[in-house]
Image 1: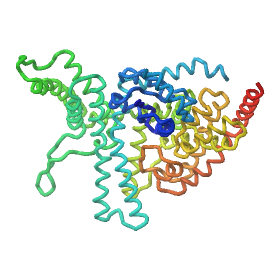
Image 2 (image 1 turned 120 degrees about the vertical axis):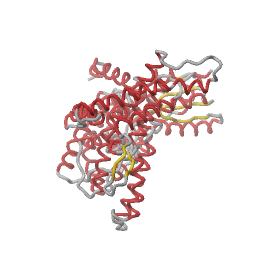
Image 3 (image 1 turned 180 degrees about the vertical axis):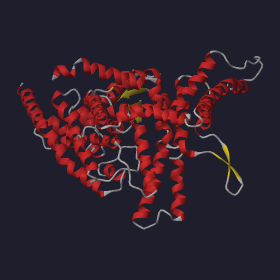
Amino acid sequence: MKILLVCAGGLSSSIVMKKVRRYGEEIGEEVVIDAVGVAEVSDVWNKYDCILTAPQVRNRFNQIKETAGIPVAAMPPQDYAIGNAANIVKLAKSLIK
Amino acid sequence: MNKLVESKLMKWLEKVSVALSESPTFSTIASGMQGNLGFIMVGAVIQVGLAIANMVFGLPTTNEWYIRINSIYNTTMGLLSLMVTFNIAFNYAKRLGMKGHNVHGFTAIVCYILVCAPITTYTLADGNTVTAINTQFLGATGLFVAIIIGLLSVRISKFCIDHHWVITMPDSVPEGVLNSFNNIIPILINIVVWYGLSTALSVLTNGQLTIPTLIIFVLSIPLNALLSPIGMLVIIIFGQLLWFFGIHGTSVVFSVMMLPMIMAYQTNAALYEAGQPLLFSYVFLWGANAMWGGSGNTLPLVLMGLKSKSKTIKAVSKAALPAGLFNINEPAVFGYPIMYNPLFLIPYVFGPVIVYFFYWAAYAFELIALPRILILTTLPIFMSHFSSTLSMTNVIFAVLMFPVVWLTWYPFFKMYEKKMIAEEEAAEAE
């Protein structure tokens, strides 16, 4: 499963990214996850299975959806804030299947 | 209060921010500027290195090696507008789905140089001649002109291509050859338009006005309104309101504020180099909203929550602390949550306003140093206060602001904590 996280500059989403990576190791599943800023999405999206967007780029959601040819969903603010990896992985899985 | 959050104002703000960030023009300007961040950062590194050599090791600014190394800064920052012109045209052509983005980038550069820095041959006092370009508008001074020429030159090319004003070739001509011919007419028309306008303006005004001076003059009117005490207050409140609605307010506001910011910093860098006093600009007050823990100064709130009796607040605060120390505020904004939380509307949106007045006073009474080193990235606390000035007084000022920010949060934190504890107890009792 390859997930792309998107926030404004790739800073806050990289915190969430690390938590999801650790969670992936814990549950023994292969989770590839990277974090980028909105501006980079168009160049990298095709390497991933799905995109999860951070709450603060809600205003760019439609644009991201149009650019990328893979499923896109917004992470719930609470899950994003504390980096709830289990919920984030669950959301990604629901997109891909 | 809840009604306010769900009011028309909120819907309007959201609409504005979506429109701004989805407009091809605005997002092109933002990405066109971002493409130069690397060069701006290299310039900042050189500046910091030279400042240390100057202050710690006493290397005079007139030293031959000082000047040699400084010419790197003069090149990275001194050609900023040229790079922006290319980046904007390139990104805009890409965004509009046109072929050959590079060509449009270079077309814009050619037009920019023709208009702002035409190649001229000068006769020197000793009778020799030198062919040179005037670099006056190639640096940050020309940024607005760079954006306008970058965007409009692509529009002109698109107009030509859409109207099939291209040289047509028989089908047997290979695609590669065809592409280079396709661009001849758009490039020519761009040159005729820009150079024609520039020459006409120069002839009509006897050389008094040029396109760059005219554009800079016209844009200085709205810009001066923005760069005023009230303008900056509106900017800060607008950015905070967007954040309150969970939208990255900084990135929306930044696409506009980045330009005056870069200009003010470059002016000060040049003044510092010349050994002259630095200038104040109201754009420097923008820092008031992100002194402690990112936009909205959320770090004190996070620290208060660490020992809270509410389990939710405690958990969120722990998760938000490391990010907060790096001036990243998302975990606090979405976790506490601050967004859509009427209790936090006042400290989050208007707390920075209080800091703003302190900040302004500190600059006005010359208690803190004026910034001159442009570092356009999020830095950890303390670093962010130190880096733009290399002055400890600015760090001390930020430390003195901490209790002020703390106090703006405290009563609201207490109210929220009480509410959360009551809710948690009720949930447990069930």
